[in-house]
Image (cartoon, rainbow, N blue to C red; front, side):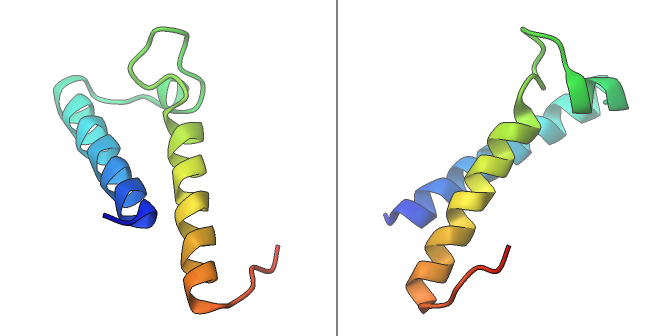
Length: 69
């Protein structure tokens, strides 16, 4: 399995856990954007964003394109 595939699988697992949590508990904006230490969503957005950025960089590398930002 390629690194990109592993990262995508990790992102999908994170999404599944988020959806499960949301369906059982609901999600308010404070928890989504600024969850306290120990909360299930603590650092969720940051970690997911890091994974997405890595996948994006690997996809550009595969295609030989450049990122503009």
